[in-house]
Image (cartoon, rainbow, N blue to C red; front, top):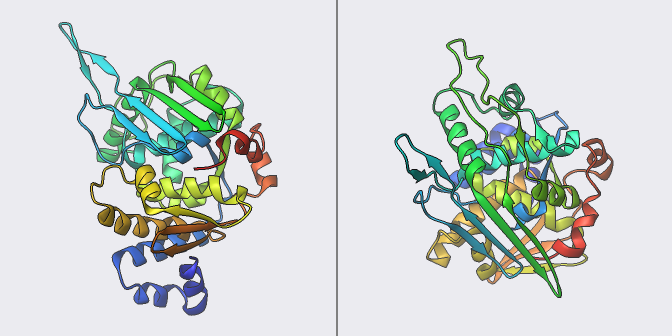
Length: 326
């Protein structure tokens, strides 16, 4: 892949948009243009487990459990409960969609930047969301607030198996809930009353297995949850490859398409999202064939020296021994 970058370089912005034949092609060109024009060199971090198994894209029933299982990784997310006046509880549902992913990325990036599992919220998250061109108000604010509560109350477990070695994270994401209130009329209200504290188990796994990501890339595809998942997966996988790695459609469907019953429907949507993800990862080298896709070695999206500037996180190479293949 990489055709979109060659097209932009060859014919320019307007002509590249004009030549886009499908809606997916246009989204890829727009993402590439946004990414290429972004001069912010910010770096974010994500626990490697989230690069291999992600949250649902769409809302599930409030009491539904999310389970995603691939050859190497099993993710289980159980919805939390909220007490209701007069007694009793109700399920709040598991987190889903792009907003949940962005909140998770913020929490983990801040934890590694400060080397602390206590994370200041409120204005910090508000400012970061605005950096991603996400308005903090109206429906967008309500979406952020809802996903923050779902993330605060859910319980997750990652089980990663490689040969005779296994890794397990079995914990809530945060130890204290992210309580949210409405902004004031001037729009200056804080999103959150308190700091959030990442659970100790999750924080330790994050420090051991971080994956650095470009904020410019995240910003360009922030409203596309599947493209976000694919970008994070490519950022995690490509730089540790020693040769071409074929991935079958069946394996891709297990990891990215559990909500699609038909493989052909998934394939079409996946390829559209893959175009968008590759548009913000110019070094990505991917071929498509009848059996699936072929990944080829590529440099990581964040250079090692920039990775070091992001905080105390260890080299991404530390991910490979246990979390090396999917």
